[in-house]
Length: 346
Ligand SMILES: *Cc1c(COP(=O)(O)O)cnc(C)c1O
Figure 1 (cartoon, rainbow, N blue to C red):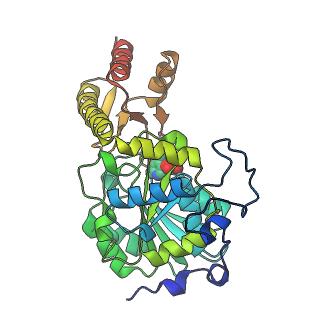
Figure 2 (figure 1 turned 180 degrees about the horizontal axis):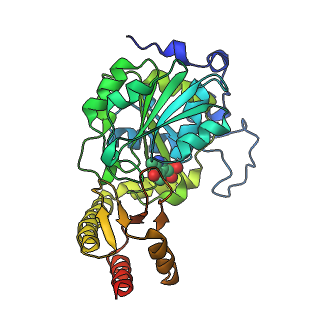
C-alpha cells in the first residue's frame, strides 16, 4: 500500500490560498516598515512577530536534526493536534483512532471538529502494538494518535511497531512525544525519513520547563508541514514567547541537569512508594510522572489534598482503577509527599 498525501487532505484545505502576512511577503532587510499598519513608536512589541520566530524555528530544527521546512511551531502541542485534525479529517465523515487510557485532547479536539473518535483499550499492562491499531482501522480512519511515552501510563511504544503501522496504513500516524526528553528510548523522529505518513509532536512544556509560553513542535515531511502552515493562524507564536524560548535554549546545561535530577528523583520515589502498604503497584515510567495503583486511591487523593498536595486522579480511566498520576517534583516536594503518605500509613 502506498501512502498518498493528496488523497487525505480535505478538499477545501487543498483549494485554500493561505493568508500571506506582510512579514511573509517581505524577507529582506529594510529600515522603513509601512506595510503592516503597526504603531511605529517602539514599545518593544509594536511589530508583528518576525525574526524571533524564524530564529527559534531554525534553532529547534537544528536541535532536532531536521530541516526548518519539516517543523511547524504551534501555540502548544494542543494547537498542533487541532491543526492536524482540521487539515485531514472531514467533519462528520472521517474519524480518528486513539487508545485508552491516553491524553484526552485527541478526543476532545476531534469532537470539537465533529470528527468521530474510535477509542481502543490498550492491551494488558497498557501495551500497544501495530496489530492492535491495524485491527481497528475503519474505512473512515484518517489519523491514528499514539502517545509515547504515554500519558498517564508512562510506557513507551517500540519504534518498530510505529514503523509497521506507518507502512500498512494509508492515513497519518501521529506520535505525541511530549515526554520524550525524559526517556532513554529513541525518538520516533528517526523514522521521518522512511515514513512519509508520520507526524511527530513534541513540546517545550514538560522537560524544557516552559509550559507557560505555549510552544509545541510539529515535525513531519515538508509536504505535510506546508499543508498545516496553510491553516495555522498567521502569528500564532508571540515575540515574547519566542524570546523566552531562545533564552532557555541557550543554556542546555540547566536543562540537562534538571532532567537528570528529575529522573533520579523518579527512581527514588518509585522505590519508596513501592514500600508503602497503601500502594499496590507503581508502573514503570519513561516520563516524569508515575502512575501508582493504591488500595484506595480516593482516600489517598483526598488525604493528600488536606496536606496541601495535589496529584492527578486517573482512577476513572480505562484500566486505571485506584490509580493516581504523580508528577516528580523537586527533591523537597518529593520528601513532603513521602512524609505525608507515611503519616497516612500510621
Ligand atoms: C502535557 C501534554 C501535552 C501538552 O502540551 P502543550 O505543548 O503544553 O500543549 C501534549 N501531549 C501530552 C501527552 C501531554 O501530556
